[in-house]
Image (cartoon, rainbow, N blue to C red; front, side, top):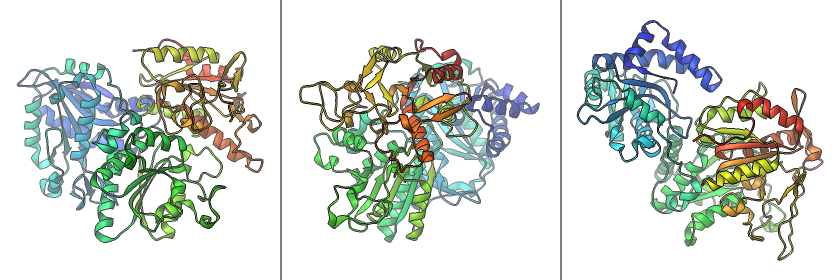
Length: 629
């Protein structure tokens, strides 16, 4: 959170005009960049409206937790009020979503969406649903609310609006965790606050919420079967929920008016793209819609067939590959969910494609043509092979050629890496995927980071974490040759050799070898520990602790990185692949590997100068130490 103070203290800072400088200073310290003008404007106009109502309610001693970061994510609630319930004497929490809107009306097709006059050209999430989502998420993941979910309520306060201007929003259905108040219902808002907060100190309640352990996050693979076949398992937030609702709206429109719409969802690693994909697939499957999930990843598709489709063939058949639609009829399906769409190829044809099916038709066109509502979920920085071309720009261009409407939703939150935006930005700067060069790592209590001096040290550390019940994997850049055939009865060859330490790559192929799982299950089968994974088996998955080996293809020299393509053993890099393309793909490879961990990452480089640079950047946490908590 940015600030945690009593209402009276916030009011005093506000009147001295120090509050906004304080908020800005804290924001820069936590996030490493300046807040947007819109964010500062929101603070200056909305916080005074809330403080005024709290003071009039006599709640001077209630604690205000401003820009509160939800556990295990980078998403922030505008304000959480912490205090004591006036009737029960228990801790009581009120989540407030502040809006400066003057007019808004519900979307005619989806009550969970709305349109804001003069602000957006497409729907946004109804603030009732937004604040309800925050409350539900906190109840699910904050330990102090475990068994006490009744202690949290929520409301959106549209302080500039009148009942006339936004009255239709309540079509989303008001509830204790989701309701709204307007400026001309200020008296009712004050009464609502008094009903949930007593006029006494909220410091102890704020302590409890702030210091509570975060409950384990819902890992996609663990609940995949229940998600698709039974019921919703994931709590979608803000832009995630917006993307979900926009797809369902497009499906209803397509059925009603014989229309077609392309939807693109962009976001970095851990922003929830695959969670949205699985949530949509499950909902559409349970509705009886014709919906399929497709990727370009053999590992991800085979894993989902095994886990989600266990003992149920019709569910297994929901998971396809991008090149499965070469002969599909036009608009064959209601929805095609293209996950990891950055892995699309120029065309679907390969050496195994029958001559009768070979065409020059772009793969993106095949996918769009096959369904009423094509949904593409992607991250431009996860393109790791030459020929992968799934980008927002390419998809928008394909939709424009066909005269189709294309809606883009950007996910700005982060759920992997402990929800640490700071860690993700550190990785991007480290790899020169964002301008400015590498920066010092500042621990943020969300993501743990360490540098190992040897691969043995890294492996032993990860083994200790596994003994504590965490999942862990080791992965590396593709800098060692990979033996693809193992004789029957023989162990995996130890291809990854660093000094006197040697380990095998993960299995090449679809059969287990000497107790090691097939490639597609390396990231999810506990027996995958002990082999070194490559980007093609790690991409799309997550585990608690990630050990990453930076190979000699990416080293620090003097004051900059050097990409040495001659050290790469990846067969997809041909002599004809330009140097700048190879350099970008190697950087993207390490971005993927460095963003698999949910709890922490341990980095080892085979190069001494690079290790020294990493120790300098990581600072006090440079050497492996016991994790906190």
